[in-house]
Length: 171
Ligand SMILES: [Fe+2]
Image 1 (cartoon, rainbow, N blue to C red):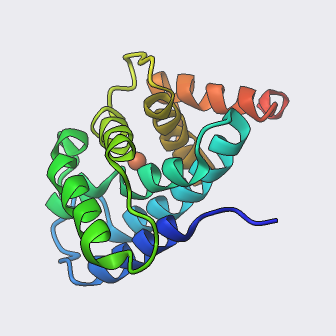
Image 2: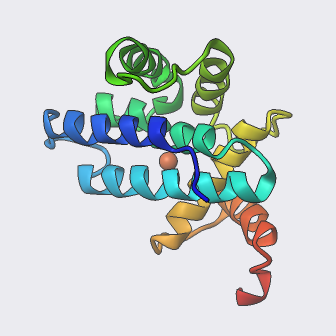
């Protein structure tokens, strides 16, 4: 058995190459963190989607692109909303060129990806969209797994994940 991950892998390969062309200077967050977080959240996205019955490749793509606003602009402020144009650009590039013979990312998937990314920083607001909430949870879980102090809204989202994987007793 195997998972259908070719579209996600193609996008991650593109991001890996694209990031090498960006300036590493004067960033709110070091590029090494952004790259680490991009790869680890995309894997967590696949796992969380499998556990929640969501589309694992779609959640993996969302996670891979979720901080593209901060990666491209070097700034954390409004990075979720600022991701909008980069998300559309990268998916357009994927659909027109990068995908080769792989399936397109269709309109309804684009909509899900875009909404999850531009809303992922609103950790104090609860959405009815499972992909938006999953992305917030994954973001908080990944920071925690990298040893970052977790409190406030991040802790709420981390606890969602610890519950999902029945890990609360580790606290
Ligand atoms: Fe993030």
